Length: 368
Image (cartoon, rainbow, N blue to C red; front, side, top):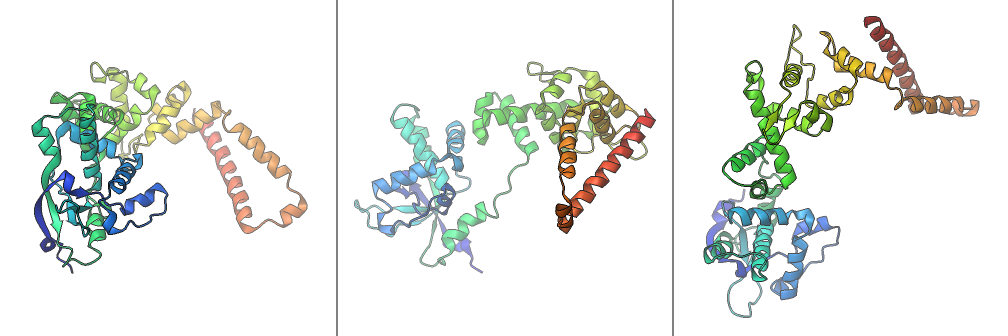
């Protein structure tokens, strides 16, 4: 077992001394064949410029990282890992090839290029933060040849566990309440402004549920996804009367009703909306009074409400039924004799589903 800790030594580096890796394995994501650049040419100006432009491709999300560093500065908590460049520097100064941290180095160079042309302006303190920092130097003479793959892999394959949606939303909330704008909070976390705003609303909605006397105890982080689904559906947002100004839902009675559907109730201790994706089905039937009456009944379920809805709204499925009936009528004796088992299984499944749907309809109509 290789002890990588003993092969990495802290080293102070300057941004100008770092070379982006032109043979970075991530370039295969660009759909191009990776032609190896000889080690001796790594420091060529055109090679570095080409590597820099490749790293700026949207697929690598460097722009969001750039905006995050611009907002909060470069915090090298997770240090850049480098190795000595084996080429011959023209000025005699040592150069280092980036093993882990090519995105961060690209983001830093991007910010400096914007500063140089006047699109950004950084003071001397900030410039030093962006250009001088501590990294980790790999002793590649003692390290195995696989080290340049293993070290990035520890981060990007096994990976640092990404924050869950609730943790991100809680952080966006804290940043907003600290005085940052919605855009600044988003950039601080490498999120789009739209995603950060959505997370902020979901967090507020969950906090609103926490404040409810009857249902507050159920407002756990796992409930966050319910509100995420609600905010994705315009009819539910409007029905619950969300206000960005007041930062909460204003239709209190309806909101209480939704809470009651989200938490386990009754002898069976089962929620009418058993999981967050149930919100999608609720949204589909929300504007149908008959379907909602079935759903609100003591023994009402989403399944029963959906069947009621489909009885009254045959437009979506009826043409498909007609098409299926027409296809079956077109089957010739020769075709029927040549049906394989997979096709027969499909026909039998169709028949079973039709029989079940008719039974469900008869049961539903009898209970109304």
